Length: 285
Image 1 (cartoon, rainbow, N blue to C red):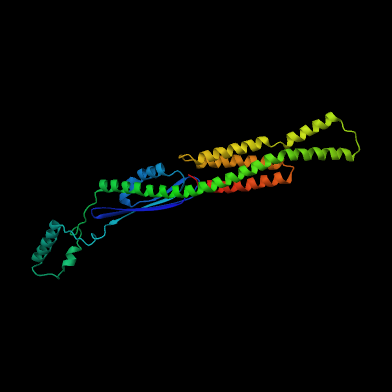
Image 2: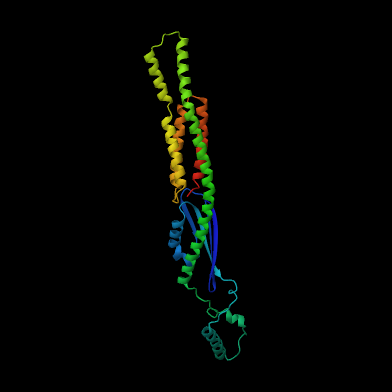
């Protein structure tokens, strides 16, 4: 299922931004991009994502930078600055003359004169995880909205399958009657006196061969279980995938037993509907 979410947070001089994208995938595949300073959070981040999302290819990125308005703040290391100036003065005294002049910018460029406020790793880590929780809430909400639309589509297809099964049930007595008449016509063509018992045996054989009551019962049961699963709050994607495979198996058997054009059409329509369901179920968490 697809989703995009982002969240910004600020701690003193630092700004953190999470971006999360997810697309359809049969399993959970997480790709993380973390700054080096936050590598220590990788296992926790993966666990937090796995607790919220079950399926999908997920790209999660953390951006870490100076907060706006703080990048221009200069902090001097007074002790280091004094040491650099005293050293420069000592060099001139040793030389006995003034050396080439240097500017204030030259001094600021000396290592250690400008100091950056160290980031509090523990506090930033806690902020990053809290911000990640906000991103995951957004992502789950977006996926739930998509799931509601997808569930409506699946229910529509399942209702159509139920209608096809009902048509086949109504049609079966007529199919058996037509087979009886066909067998009687063939016997009449050869001008043979039929053996009543043998004829009944043949009719029973054909009735058993053409009987699709079990397939229709199982199809109906799978449809009911599918609908029940759609109403649960659990992760049911793989279960729905299995049910769609079982429905396809029954539809194939229904088609292979059919000796009637209307039943064959119904079986083909059911298979088309099941294939549409199977494509969409890959997106269900």
